[in-house]
Length: 74
Image 1 (tube, rainbow, N blue to C red):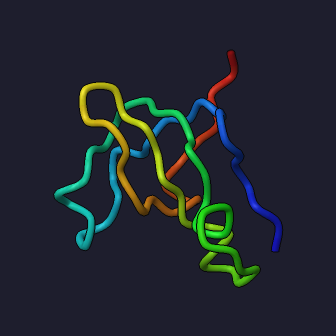
Image 2 (spheres, one colour):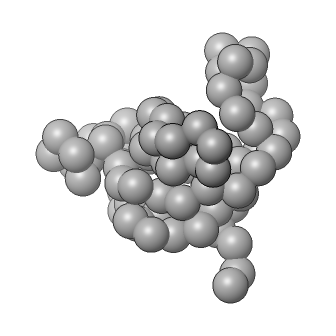
C-alpha cells in the first residue's frame, strides 16, 4: 500500500466519519501534517492510512483515515 496524502496537502474531511468518530470535526477543510508512518515509522496499511491534520481554529488532530479525506484542487 502507498500513502495517499502527504504533508501540506489540502483536504476536505467527509461529513460522515462513522459512529466511532462522531466527536471529531467533519465537513470542513484541513491541511495534512503527516501520516502515522511519517511520525512513527512503519509500513503497515494502518500506518500509511492514518493522518494528523491541522484544522483551522482547532489545531492538530489525529488520526483521520484516508477514506475520510478528499484531496482539494487548488
